[in-house]
Amino acid sequence: MLPAKPASESHLARLREHSGLTVRELARQLGTNHTTVMYWERSGKVAKPEFLLPLSRIFGVTVEELLGDPKPRRVANPGGKLGQVFEAAARLPRSKQDKVIALLEAFVDQHAMKGEATAS
Image (cartoon, rainbow, N blue to C red; front, side):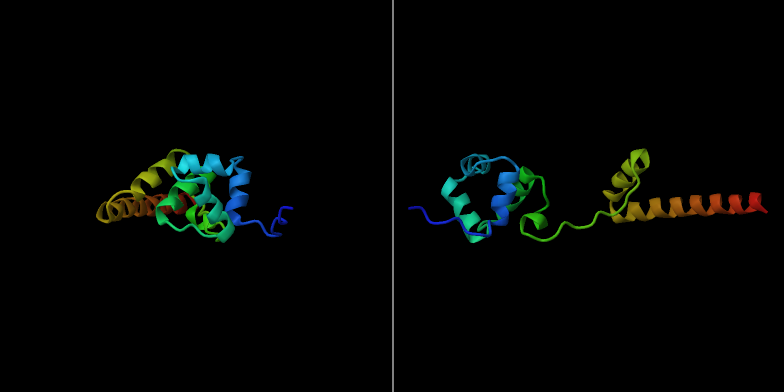
């Protein structure tokens, strides 16, 4: 007779099953053995850090979520073209970011003053 399945399934097993993967399919995608994946699921831990990022990409979650931490809140960023420009600016070196910020603050201040002048 087979032993009963544990009442609490591991977080990794739930993520794998939600993704529709078998243990062997997941192991194949990671380039490891299925027994290693089974160990991770039973123990609740991933022994080698180099598997964290590939696992998170396969499951479509952050590494934090993979490790069981709650999903971090998203910061509301503008969408569309403005959001793309802000994302590109965020990748610039800090000195360049400071110049973009100064330019944008001056533009917004100038626009706000014009709005106040027309409202009077």
